[in-house]
Length: 251
Image 1 (cartoon, rainbow, N blue to C red):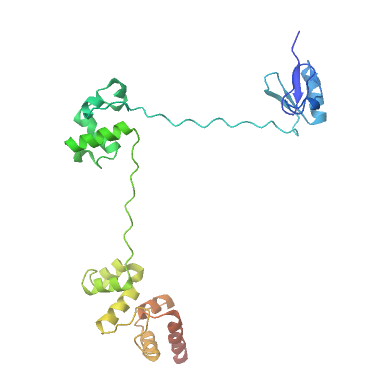
Image 2 (cartoon, rainbow, N blue to C red; image 1 turned 90 degrees about the horizontal axis):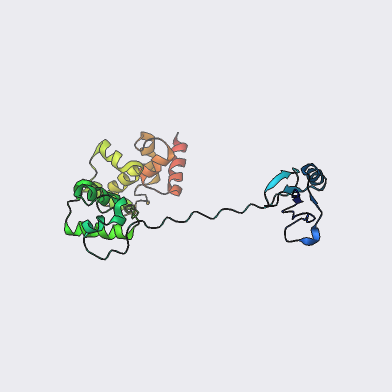
């Protein structure tokens, strides 16, 4: 006799077991041999139709789908390199049949492996010295290719440090100095001027009167734009507002 189709929210058991869920026998509603009959009830009750294996073969469109279990995550590939070797020769290690995927033990191949496993940065740097061979053996036996660590960023220098370097001639002159110092050029140059004039004031403190600085701004000594002018003067925002007010008063 033909086996019935099963109808329920999750799984409908054989023959009379038509349930909301496989484990809820109290919710049983029915079972069918004919698919059309099962579809009709599914539409009226907002259910799904499943076969005996639990495979969805019809959905009413408004029924809740059975949750689909996520597949197990792919296992992390095991280390294919031989880990049981206890000798001290990378040549012998590479000659093991279990390490055939690594290539032969020739110097040319060891150079490639040394770069791949970060022993050296280029093949020309690997000459097969005792230390290089030992480092390569340890890396291969470990199996994982080391991740290169980015070089640390250089420390940010203070305005006083940069100003002293300018005085020492480390940043050239004119456009070359401006290019090297970039956006810090104006404030560093202002500090250089302070140091060379004998001022011990901090780079953010004014060494001239408001009137003197306003005159320089009007002459164009400090360029255009409020940010550039303030940095060139080497003063705080509050002091610059005073200079700006004096400039506007004279204009």
